[in-house]
Every structure is written in C-alpha cells, then in structure tokens.
Image (cartoon, rainbow, N blue to C red; front, top):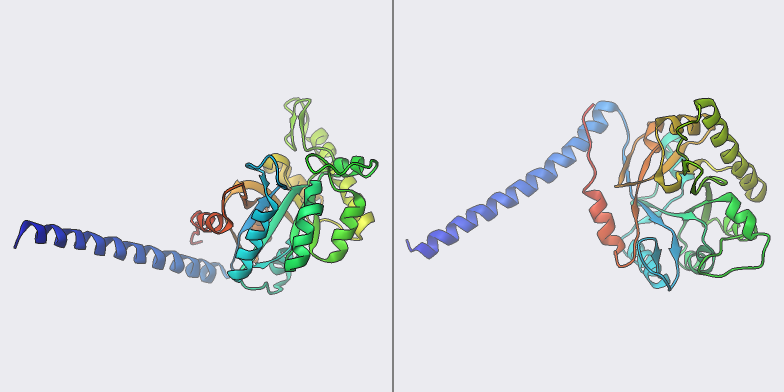
Length: 296
C-alpha cells in the first residue's frame, strides 16, 4: 500500500471518529433532556429571549440596530416557523399549563426609546409579531410633558404606550421607575454598601410600585415581569422582587432558557443581545449551545 493510501485511510478513520462523536453528543444531549423531564416530572420548553434597545439608522452598535436589520429578524423568524410570545403567555404556561405555540421566542425591548414606537411598532403590525417592552417610568413621565420626539434620544410617552398596548402586539413590563442609572453609590438595583436591608427593601418597593401603579392606570394591566437595569441583581434583590408579586425577571446573562412548570425557572431568565451586524439566526444558534441540563 502506498504512503498516500495509508495517509488517506488514516484521515478517513479520523473523520469517522469525529462524525461518531458528534452524533453521540447529540444523542446524549437529547437523552439528558428526556431523562430530566421524566425524572423530575417537569414539562420543558426551550425559549430564546432576544434583547433589543434602539432601532434607528444612526450610531449603530451593541445596543442599536437599523430598521432594516429588525425587519430581517422578523423575516427570519417567520420563515423558520418561530412564534413570538409575551411574558404573560410564558407565565401562564408555567403556572397553568396553558399551551405555547411551537418554537416560541420572546423579543424583549429595554428602556423605551422613541425608536420603538416609530420604527418597531409599524413592523410589528405588518408582520403581526409581538414584543415585550420594559419601560423606565421616570423617563416616560418626563417625555410625556414635552413635545420632543427626536429619534436620537427621546423616549416613548404614555400616549404611545396606550396605543401600543391596545394593539395587543406590545406587552408593557417594569424596568424600574427611576433606578436605571449609576449614581450616589447605587448601580441600578444594587444595594448600597452603607444601606441596611430594610432601607434597601423600602427603596426597591417604593420605586417599582410607583411604576406598577402608573402602568395599571394607563393600560389597565399590571406588569408581571421585572427587567433588571444593567442586569444587576443578587439573591436579596430577587427575594424582594418576588415579595412584590412579580412572577418573572429578565437578566442580561447570555444564553437560552429551559423553562419548566417550576415557577423558579422564570427568574433570572437569560437573554441574547441583538447587536448590529449580528444576524438573529446565528445568535439563536449560538445561544442554543449554552443549554445545559442536569438529571435531578
């Protein structure tokens, strides 16, 4: 046998080993999910949550994509049989067993940029897709008092929120009333170093409840989900959030979620940041690789 034939035979063996390993890995992953579901008597659903901020044609980057990019996301989701759902639907699935559509995905928007009303809302109506919008109450209050809709910095008003909520395509959630900043020793919802637990709980409770009441007044619905400013939180923060009646929280931790019928699976939900020049298909597939399941 020639050296060339031996070399090709060696390469073929390596290729077969790689293919066998890949197939075995896929089989093991599927079996782990099946075993986990069976052993814990839990129903499982895989839910990617995309995180958006602004959609406009300038200053594109980590938190800003163009309207054309967002429309390409909607086209991709439609062509690949994804169904957009709201947090309320996901919560109903966990608490009440209400069925979800196949291939559920959540498109979450943070802060409440006016670009959401101008550039996202029209596309949602065109494609009949849903988003979850977590707003900062103080910013919406401020811009509801002035006539300023500059795409580069303005924030949606309460009138905008009412219109979007009435469409059934935009679900409003809580991103704090006035804690989305870094100042006076506080980073978002983090506890200050010199603050007692009671003082900290009082601050969080007053702030979040202020926005809860305002959203209820405008939409006749009360937010069920809290989205952490900057993704900053700890166990103490989470315990306060639960005490306030929130059923779920959104973090900035990267990944895709495995949600079960255990309500705890709704807290600290992972998200995938949709940045400029990062196609949604590639992002979702990358997020899927982060899924890890364990056998109870």
